Amino acid sequence: MLGLLAGEELEPFEPSRALAVAGADVLAVPATAAWPFPVAFAGTRVPLRPERRRAADPWFAHPARLRAGDSHVWVAFANAGPVPGGVFCPDHVATPRHEALAVRPGWTALRCPLRGPDPFGAACAAKPQLARRRADLFTAPLLAPAEETSS
Image (cartoon, rainbow, N blue to C red; front, top):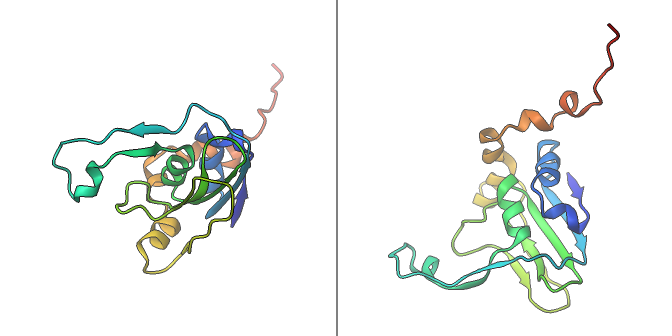
């Protein structure tokens, strides 16, 4: 299933989480966003394995990357603002990253498995983080308007 968010809906986690709970596997996000994101990572001398996890990353805390990993969905983020767009995978801690970052205007593409033996497709299908979250807070009965009772 495809979910659609406006760019500003990517900053808080709730809209993307609600779409993931509803069964979305891909979120399309057109935007003109200029958030204070992404937060860069300067790198570290801590002996992380694999070694590439130690490297500096100017786009480390990218909002689309974080939302993709939060809810195990693919995020296709097309941004006309200063934050680079791209396609981000359902596992935001995987190394090497499986994403296509668009650091300048133009097209970008990435194969995005939704199911199957591929680890990213399996994560997208299973959405294991949702089991650790209070996904029940995003279900229809709790989001429905409260009924008034007369006393």
